[in-house]
Image (cartoon, rainbow, N blue to C red):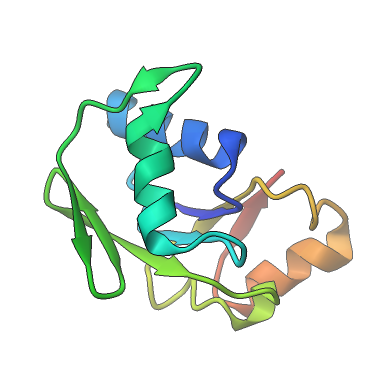
Length: 116
C-alpha cells in the first residue's frame, strides 16, 4: 500500500495497517513535509497518542519495526514510483486527487488501484 498525503488521514491509514497487520505500507508521498517531521508527526500524535513502534530513519524513508517505508516528496503523482515501491494500492489521503483524472496519475506511477 502507498499513501499519498501524510496529514492526519494518511497517518491514520499507516497506523491502522501496522496495528491490524493485514496491509504493508511500502511508500508515502507528501510534497510539503520533510522526513524528520513525518517521523515526528507519526510518533507524537496530539489526538491519538504516541505510536509505540520502533521507527528508524533511513536515507530514503524510514523503518517501522524493521519494515521499509520509502518516502517521496513529489507534487505530481505521476512521478511517484509506486510500482517500484511495490505499492499496488494507493490511499489518496491528500484530498487533492479525488477525481478520475487525478487518480489516473497514481496509476501512471505504477499503482494498480486508488482508494479515495
